[in-house]
Length: 238
Picture 1 (cartoon, rainbow, N blue to C red):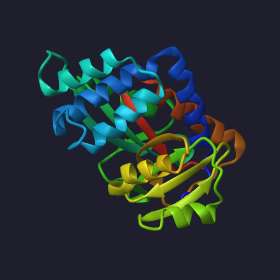
Picture 2: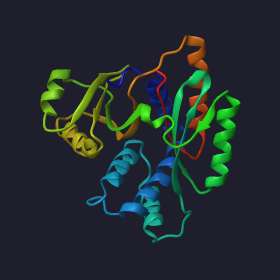
Picture 3: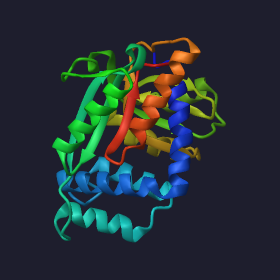
């Protein structure tokens, strides 16, 4: 279903570099603030916040940073008001791209997205112009796995699992968005190390390009991903 994606492996490596630079802290703080604003600061009633805090702890984000971000979201501390928005369009050689944004200035980010797409020979589209090629799924990633695919299927039989995909490192489990936190908890109860558990745009049909053209696509996607206001980048480029 999901297909192997070189971009997924590139993102994985980039995320580790961002961890080292502390850049991930900035993006996580913004997302924690927004999610706490929308769903409250209590993880018992806010599954999205629970997932984010798990991710924050995985990258050793200081507790004071986490607490401050939550309090900004709940209004206990003053802070910048972030807005969430999504841009869709086509990148180099027709690859479909979805960019999820967290920003304090929607006018500025709209202009910057138009510029980035245009510079790389692409164009922004209207809402829905490429999202029909994707589905929003929960994606739980394991750095390594001592269980076979059949054993994983048996262990997760009670959940709506869409696919299990072997990756360059570990594996990815695709599930219904409502089940992502429960799948994470189940895997951890089995003694497996969960690297990440989040919602992602997953292409229904991956799109292949010759190596040289694909490389231009990956360079464009990496530049988008490096933008401070970009929360995630999805593509149908295999």
